[in-house]
Image (cartoon, rainbow, N blue to C red):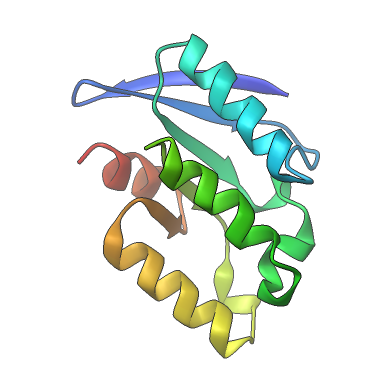
Length: 119
């Protein structure tokens, strides 16, 4: 895994670059936040493919645990992926509410990620 830092509108954003799953549990997310913080980035971009699939099954509680850490440490997050493939109404509602508040963002492209995290 590599973190690539980009600066947009004065905000440093760390993008996770990997073809593998890098977040399997809450500690993995905390480690990425710490690494990003060491690079002076308080905003993180990660791709859906880098997150354990159970994250998107809200009944597992993984999403809640991980995303709570991002909120607790005031670290904005953008998750890039194609979320239309998920049929769970609760997940769709969760994505809608998350995007509305702006701390956690589910987006379709890197451009959208940069845009929402640079506000």
